[in-house]
Length: 468
Image 1 (cartoon, rainbow, N blue to C red):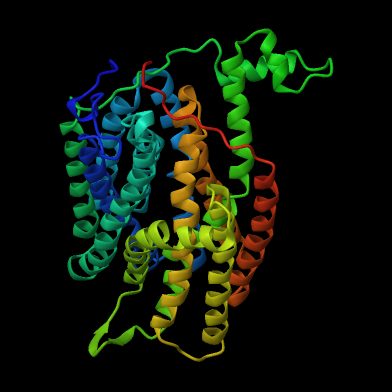
Image 2 (image 1 turned 180 degrees about the vertical axis):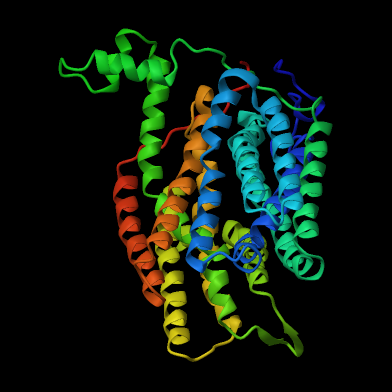
């Protein structure tokens, strides 16, 4: 793709105004997230109630699927950076994504066919993840750096806008019309998302792929291994065969990777609000009275608290809490400080659900409304860790590795879900002990993160003038 400038990104554009083409990406993301979170909101319930899987097996399979959605970003980023570019990668893998939704709707009575559908969705959803986030950043010039943070906030807001409505509607659709319709509607939304993204094709700034790179990551690493010794650092040995910027790019990726390692446990906890927390809600009293409105909730509707809380908390944190903390503590709330604090907050949310589970295991039923507090706490953690992490990953990535480092961020979600899937599968921790185990390990990794972050030197790799 040629590197073109659209009217929405001309040289005289106002620095604090979003480029015109952003609207296509943002609304594409809202529809795509509706489709993804819609099907995922009913997945664990479908596996237990319709495919009749054991609760622990269903939890494990749920997290295996969620993890796969964050493994395929490695493939998507590689194809995007080296061969197709972001736009083509997003379009083609979105069609695979749509096909996967079709499989879910058609094979509701076949576990094999249904799991094939999950595989296609994981490939499509995962493949486009690093490309969409990086594609948003590509639309901005250095003079619009302040707007970049705001657009990531808007981007995350629209993700949760789609997530909220799908999480409220899809469980009801499953109960009223069955799995075929419940999984079919998200598929229609994914097809709509693809069309919306395609409509902006002539306005996007297209940063071309780098092609086959003689100074790529693998070649730099092999050169570093060959040239080890002589008192030089590991990667510095590669400077004998490769230019300075190629070695520095790999070094930047390594440094960012150290930060990301400690983030994996956050995702091991966070994604459980769609699995173990939903299964806990099944044991609670679902008949609630909300300000005089008497209703019966569905267990898989409770996670809708998360996206609605995100939409509320984003502006509160951006314009209220972060500036207040900087004023009170006389220190900048850097991305790493936000993320570190968010991890400790995450651990506390699991202490609460662990206490609830001890009460339930003791034979006393409590209202599902008690889950509102841990949902609020873990959503606060999400705002501090996840939104900040997206911005951090983009700004710390050299141009040739934008999608690659974004995929490294998404890999933290993969490993986190693999940890949860394994713990659920071996079934070592029962009841409240399951949640308390995760709370403890999150606290430990939060301390590790703070220690690593202290030694990290922030970089600034905005896309320059997009002159490539």
